[in-house]
Image (cartoon, rainbow, N blue to C red; front, side, top):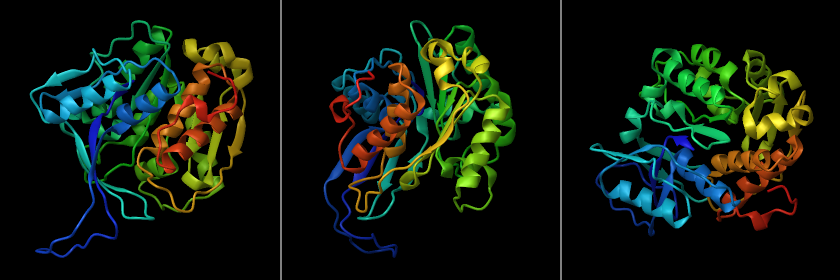
Length: 330
């Protein structure tokens, strides 16, 4: 597990916070958790009993200590988590009741993560998270990310990537994401973005449709990605996979299942939760469920089922656990 990690600071909100200056607004207790792709996905995978090794950058500060302590408490290895004399990344999570969350985010130590120090020894699968929040990884049209993925492919490691919504005014807002995807796709075995992630890179209309979702999946697969799983929240997930020849080159975690996974195109529908406890980390949990099924030798529709169940657990206010699932995949 490599890439973006932060600390999520979530004040308890009982109603919509005011915007006018000079006032006083009562809030509930502050929830402090490890977040970002590395935090959310690794904690969910650990709940499935998957052995996880984290590789990222934090600051030598109190927030960095929180990251280390929480990962250790979950049994996640972090000996490759670098500390530097910079501030640890954090997000202030604004989540009024019944609404999707908004992040006030500081990329912090993630600014210096470029993938060069990622150790691939003993890995079956490398999952990299949030290149939109890792500016050093996507300079030169994503060349550092391409090098990391190519190095993993050469080592027989299955490569996986998750995205984040792009802030057009943020540190990677000026990056040519079409060029990045063209460069990295041939080295990418699994891509698990949300529909909103992909839309944000196009600066196009935000309206969702099955046709647009499948259009994204088809385009990415044609560019060279082995498995594309696009989540759309309560609307479910679209899965599109390449042919068996491509998947036989998809690393130790996926290649043995190449024939089973080949040439898939389907949508997995989900039941909407009307009043979620929290949406924070639900997308990362979905990816964790999908990857847990891959690592356990599950079939594509099982992976989509696991993804939906893991996301649902977060929406219901708990971390995914292996006991939540009935299929004996892992």
